[in-house]
Amino acid sequence: MMNETAIHIEDCDTVVKLWRKKCLERGDQIAHREKDLGIWQRFSWLDYYHSARAIGVALMQLGLQRGQPVSILSEDNKEWLYCDMGIVGAGGISNGIYTTDSAEQLAYLINDSGSAFLFVENDEQLDKYLTVRDQVPTLKKVIVYDRKGLRNFSDPMVMFLDELITLGESMEDAEQRFAASVAESRPDEIRMLIYTSGTTGAPKGAMISHRNILFQLKAGETMLEALDSDEQLCFLPLCHILERLVSVEMPTYKGCTVNFAESPETVFDNLREVSPHTFTAVPRLWEKIYSSIMNMRTDATAFGRWAFDQAIASGRSFHDAAAATLAQRLRYRLWDLLVLRNLRNMIGMGRIRRATTGAAPISPDLISWFHAIGVPLYEGYGMTESTGVISVNTADRQSIGTVGHVLPGTEVRISEQGEILVRGGHVFAGYWKKPEKTAEDIRDGWLHTGDMGKLENGMLTITGRIKDIIITAGGKNITPAEIESKLKFSPFISDAVVIGDQRKYLTCLIMIDQENVEKFAQDNQVHFSDFASLCRAAEVLEMIGGIVEEVNKSFAQVEQIKYFRLIDVLLTAEDDELTATMKLKRSFVEKKHKALIDSMY
Image 1 (cartoon, one colour):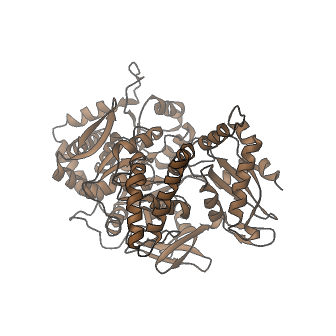
Image 2 (cartoon, one colour):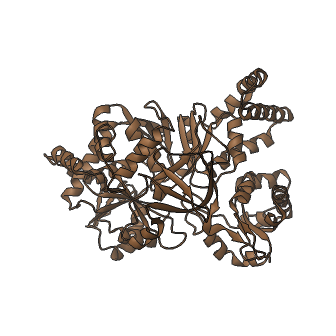
Image 3 (tube, rainbow, N blue to C red):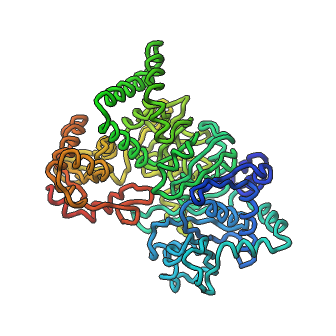
């Protein structure tokens, strides 16, 4: 990849050159919105540029060298983006760290990247640094966004973001220095580090170059339309490649307006307030929306439930038909007017033109259901090492159950072992300081994804992860992803892990959806005092058992779940079992709940 002709967008061969050009062209047009005291405030492209420039030149003044990483530990906000582009504009490498990471994880990531500076959002994140300050010798300075709770705090290693910006703004040659640094950027320089979740070992920093990003932008625009009038909601961690593409790189290119969710807890409220034109989320959020709506259906009157079911049926009939008849169109329009339009407005999808899902498997039934209510949800596939997207379904070409058509300029083939191999300009530059790990994943120019799949009629289907394949004691190979997806379609199940490697039969660990199962318990007068007792309630176990039995009917006998157990502790992204994007880590789950698993055999 490194010797290819540079990719250009509007005569720019790096992301930061494109960003500077677009900021200066768009001027006072709105780039971002963020809530302050309950009111959405606007921030322009010039605000974006001037703040990032001040940060960038101040970092240079404090000793940032070209090619040095700088880490950001913060929830999503405009400052995250200002620092991100300021770092890259100054020649540094931006490295995001999840706010759910522990102090020990923070120390590992700072040391592995060799970060020269660390940005933290508030006193809570600053405390993590203070806990491990003696373990992170590469840091020159720690910069804090928010002064709240730190009014009387003083430390020679710590300064505040407003002080850093003031330093940058006070330099008379700020524009000249920053513009020269941006002009110095080259396509093969590293634009960002994205650390893997570390489910199979220590996290590795994937090096994403400017060339990788520009390839994604050019290829992506041919399949997923983005308009300068689009409103978006940013809520997934910006450390994740998917949110970085959606909320930083694509808006830079296309001029979309990015609205920052107040917090992960307010996403649904903010979604209703913004009513975005395009929206990208992980399966867990789509499952949550579906569960909430099905809860409301349960609470409705008999007539309300009937009307809802009729509306869904009309939506399925209309969207599933290759060519809808006049009767199907008229019926759908009627129920859309009476029910579905109000439903979309209620969940913040009243203006939605395109919704996408990725980063984890999703049930095809769930995608079909969203299409039925008029939300065009498309599944895509990618990974950090491919700079995000490898393939995606689109309005013009969709096959539910697949992850869509491969991006233009991308080659995909299936190895003899069934593994998906990828080649193209978006394949990453390698792992930071780990050439041996890079050599394991990139062989003969092909990225070995670790995913099993098939390619038919140009559409890619994922059948599971190679490392997740279950080989039963009888020698049967089973990929658990499809079984788990069908289980998760139930509003009462938030996640599931199928077990059975080297065992005589399959079993399953299930995480129930707290809100929906609690409501089930209240509606059916089931007594419980806490989450653990809820998981032990006979009525709950019977209800979940019924779901498992129903799912079993879709599979051959050897693929059916014989026993299940409920994980009776609530998990958050701070727990080892979950990634920051709320995916269960199979290896951690199997290790931590070994006794529970053994009880089923």
